Length: 107
Ligand code: SF4
Image (cartoon, rainbow, N blue to C red):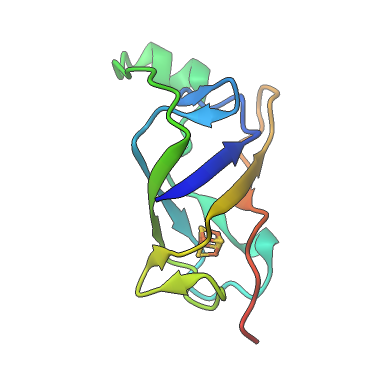
Protein backbone atom coordinates (compact mmCIF):
# COMPACT_ATOMS: atom_id res chain seq x y z
CA UNK A 1 0.00 0.00 0.00
CA UNK A 2 0.94 3.61 -0.52
CA UNK A 3 1.79 6.12 2.17
CA UNK A 4 -0.44 9.16 1.77
CA UNK A 5 0.32 12.64 2.99
CA UNK A 6 -2.65 14.93 2.43
CA UNK A 7 -2.82 18.68 2.89
CA UNK A 8 -6.58 18.93 2.23
CA UNK A 9 -7.38 19.58 5.86
CA UNK A 10 -10.83 20.81 4.87
CA UNK A 11 -11.76 17.19 4.08
CA UNK A 12 -13.72 15.31 6.71
CA UNK A 13 -11.41 12.30 6.32
CA UNK A 14 -8.25 14.31 7.00
CA UNK A 15 -6.74 13.61 10.38
CA UNK A 16 -3.50 15.49 11.00
CA UNK A 17 -2.58 15.21 7.28
CA UNK A 18 -3.33 11.49 7.23
CA UNK A 19 -6.41 10.03 5.57
CA UNK A 20 -8.90 8.11 7.67
CA UNK A 21 -11.02 6.82 4.81
CA UNK A 22 -9.18 3.52 4.22
CA UNK A 23 -9.23 3.83 0.45
CA UNK A 24 -9.52 6.70 -1.97
CA UNK A 25 -10.12 7.32 -5.66
CA UNK A 26 -7.94 9.64 -7.69
CA UNK A 27 -9.62 10.95 -10.83
CA UNK A 28 -8.03 12.20 -14.04
CA UNK A 29 -8.71 9.78 -16.89
CA UNK A 30 -6.94 11.91 -19.45
CA UNK A 31 -4.64 13.82 -17.13
CA UNK A 32 -1.23 14.87 -18.42
CA UNK A 33 -0.50 17.22 -15.52
CA UNK A 34 -1.01 16.98 -11.76
CA UNK A 35 -3.50 19.86 -11.99
CA UNK A 36 -5.77 17.62 -14.05
CA UNK A 37 -6.07 15.03 -11.28
CA UNK A 38 -8.14 15.28 -8.13
CA UNK A 39 -9.12 13.25 -5.12
CA UNK A 40 -12.56 11.87 -5.91
CA UNK A 41 -13.05 10.93 -2.26
CA UNK A 42 -12.72 14.49 -0.93
CA UNK A 43 -15.69 15.49 1.21
CA UNK A 44 -16.03 18.98 2.54
CA UNK A 45 -15.92 18.80 6.32
CA UNK A 46 -18.78 21.22 6.87
CA UNK A 47 -21.14 19.73 4.28
CA UNK A 48 -20.39 16.13 5.24
CA UNK A 49 -20.96 16.87 8.92
CA UNK A 50 -24.37 18.32 8.09
CA UNK A 51 -25.20 15.13 6.19
CA UNK A 52 -24.13 13.12 9.24
CA UNK A 53 -21.86 10.84 7.21
CA UNK A 54 -20.56 9.12 10.34
CA UNK A 55 -16.90 8.70 9.47
CA UNK A 56 -14.38 7.03 11.71
CA UNK A 57 -10.97 8.59 12.20
CA UNK A 58 -8.17 6.08 12.12
CA UNK A 59 -5.68 8.50 10.55
CA UNK A 60 -4.04 5.63 8.66
CA UNK A 61 -0.66 6.25 7.09
CA UNK A 62 -1.08 3.67 4.32
CA UNK A 63 -4.03 3.57 2.01
CA UNK A 64 -5.44 1.74 -1.01
CA UNK A 65 -5.66 4.00 -4.04
CA UNK A 66 -7.94 3.41 -7.00
CA UNK A 67 -6.39 5.75 -9.52
CA UNK A 68 -7.97 6.67 -12.84
CA UNK A 69 -4.97 8.73 -13.99
CA UNK A 70 -3.65 6.04 -16.27
CA UNK A 71 -1.10 8.31 -17.93
CA UNK A 72 0.84 8.43 -14.66
CA UNK A 73 4.13 6.53 -14.46
CA UNK A 74 3.02 5.00 -11.16
CA UNK A 75 -0.30 3.73 -12.46
CA UNK A 76 -0.59 0.00 -13.05
CA UNK A 77 -4.10 -1.02 -14.05
CA UNK A 78 -5.62 1.67 -11.83
CA UNK A 79 -3.42 0.74 -8.85
CA UNK A 80 -0.89 3.26 -7.57
CA UNK A 81 2.57 1.70 -7.32
CA UNK A 82 4.29 4.72 -5.73
CA UNK A 83 5.57 4.05 -2.22
CA UNK A 84 4.28 7.43 -1.07
CA UNK A 85 2.20 10.21 -2.58
CA UNK A 86 1.23 13.75 -1.67
CA UNK A 87 -2.31 14.92 -2.21
CA UNK A 88 -2.55 18.69 -2.19
CA UNK A 89 -5.73 20.46 -1.27
CA UNK A 90 -7.07 23.55 0.31
CA UNK A 91 -7.91 24.13 3.89
CA UNK A 92 -10.30 27.05 3.64
CA UNK A 93 -14.07 27.33 3.24
CA UNK A 94 -15.40 27.36 -0.30
CA UNK A 95 -12.43 25.52 -1.75
CA UNK A 96 -12.79 21.96 -2.99
CA UNK A 97 -9.75 21.67 -5.24
CA UNK A 98 -7.38 18.76 -4.75
CA UNK A 99 -4.69 17.10 -6.84
CA UNK A 100 -2.13 14.31 -6.68
CA UNK A 101 1.16 16.22 -6.57
CA UNK A 102 3.11 13.00 -7.20
CA UNK A 103 1.59 12.52 -10.66
CA UNK A 104 4.33 12.02 -13.26
CA UNK A 105 3.21 11.72 -16.85
CA UNK A 106 4.45 8.84 -19.04
CA UNK A 107 4.18 11.26 -21.94
S1 SF4 B 1 1.15 8.94 -8.08
FE1 SF4 B 1 0.14 8.61 -10.06
S2 SF4 B 1 -0.79 6.55 -9.90
FE2 SF4 B 1 -0.32 7.25 -7.80
S3 SF4 B 1 -2.25 8.25 -7.09
FE3 SF4 B 1 -0.92 9.87 -7.94
S4 SF4 B 1 -1.62 10.07 -10.08
FE4 SF4 B 1 -2.37 8.07 -9.33
